[in-house]
Image 1 (tube, one colour):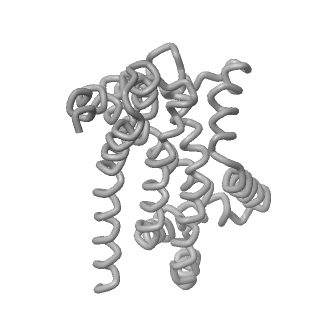
Image 2 (cartoon, rainbow, N blue to C red; image 1 turned 45 degrees about the horizontal axis):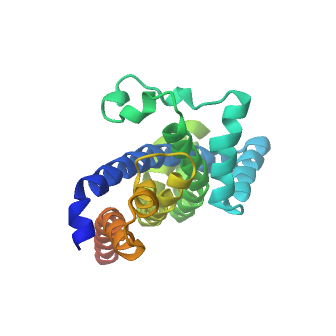
Image 3 (spheres, helix red, strand yellow; image 1 turned 180 degrees about the vertical axis):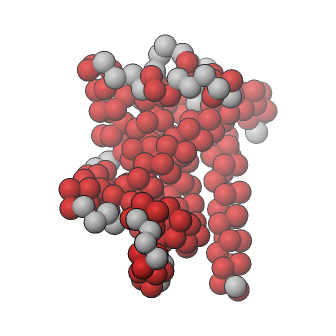
Length: 234
């Protein structure tokens, strides 16, 4: 407990940076997953194949491998995820504009990996939509894009909210790897600083890190449980 109290500020800063990383990665994962899900139900075979290939690839390789190639491989070919340097966002996520791109690249790696699981969770929601809904939309002259946008996706997201939420909870836990791929200041690197450099005992530090991760995952899990119970009663 003394270790936790004495280093509360350091833990809190690590928690804040980890939370920021997860917010950025989570938003991108939802975008990537939605695009991939639409591609998987597209009437165009090349798009279906591309969506299926993305999901198959990233669901079947370890996250550590994805982060290695994204964080260390992309900069070697000149890609530093500069598209994430969005002027308005830098007020809330200052690390986006720092020239060391580890925050951006770790967020991108997490998003690419998680997006494949979001896609499958969302596709299960698409399968829950009654086929007659899409057929009725086509009958009144809606295009595929209009059908997906106004009919299929709204109902699919409603059906898939709990599975997608579970994927995001998993992503929160997976973010612990970012500290081993160049990101400085998150909870993982905080643990390394306290143990390796500060000489603190490992167990108390690990318990402190666990507390902060639980602070992210438990509230979201409780919300998902409440949503699921409400859906069962509806």
